[in-house]
Image (cartoon, rainbow, N blue to C red):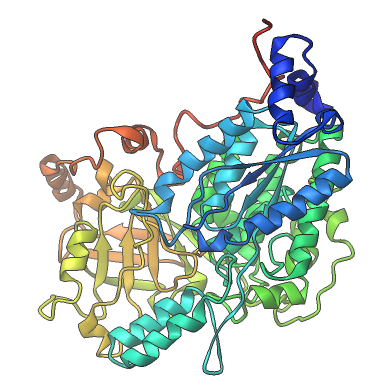
Length: 574
Ligand code: FES
């Protein structure tokens, strides 16, 4: 597509000799740009700043750093907003809007006279959404993420958002923490802008961006408030101008092998299970299938070497000081396709050759890993014929093989109403099942898969149980939690047929998830089953329900897979 390389789109926009070009120049000059600016390639800065997204509160500053770099390299930066998905603020779940944000990014790139784009993202869904949109539009693109927030700190203890929100809330619910202490925690756990600072979904997706070659080396782990993040933003601004001149588009960078590298890094950092949904969606935009089996296969041969919470001990600032993702990648090189191209114009291996590992307990050598195998396992069986996942690195070892009686909640409302009922028929061996929280049923796969432990069991000292659902779990969460059961219950998957008292067998070493009910009985239940009422009859929600794919395909819309590269800027000639 040479017509959008080297600034061709903006030249067509500003250089047209007729009325369209006259209008484009006149209206742009109204913002104070002069002729000299209009001759430069236009670099869009796709900014997801919002006061309803605490993780992105510093993005105006980061955009200014990018702009400096763009001007330095001879480009013309133009910042524009796209939808911002604040994980904490959005209801019913930010995941419902990931595909909308991806469409917004793609269409804003497509519709405006941009030659290249810098994507600013950080909070969980913003990173995959920005990548999905940019890959489908396929103009030169580079990601600058917001970086992890400062470590939480309370009474001498380093805290992680929101791994410790969950752990300490369990203590509070169990009556082991008083109201005043719980309240005081609020002031110390989230101390700055930036994304959650454990290896949750945001950290994982920004690590994925780096290994895919879509950001400069080091982008994922530099803390949000560290001046080095602004300096990286400035360098990224310079680099995107060069990428435009080189015609270095996502389609030249992203290959099946670069996605295999991403799954390898995912395994080595014990990344968030949400990546098992987001990465297939991102790959799908590049026309690449990432079957669940690949995750299991790579996980088997990849040790966990990043010692990071919630599976390990440290947080993102420690990872940064220990060498960041470049340090992890250098150690992992024997397991990677090092010859994959990146936004630097160099290969992945060339990018990390000089990376240093400053702390061998944070980034462990391959010979002395945190865990011998990757953090996530893919399960199959009559309860999940299309697959399910479990983050074994953050699960209870004693529950890795377990058979127990199902206690079924038909949706989130049912769960909320009954989970703390003192008369609930439950014990520590029960298997908690939550239905109707998948892509269609949730809707949007809310992060409710780590069902709370019933209060009466918390008081008995129970802190983990087997939990199964078709929903997701926050990357900062932990426990023996089976997620993304496919096909989901709302479209008639076997999860919909589970009843109280059924025996369920979980066998993680054998990768099995079985409902111990006869085929005849399941057929009888299926004949009686009726789908739940649809959540939406109009608007974006209806579009979502009509077109969302199942979790194993990334929960993208069926009509959004693939790319439709941006051509020259089109305009009427009169
Ligand atoms: Fe934004 Fe956790 S709330 S990454």
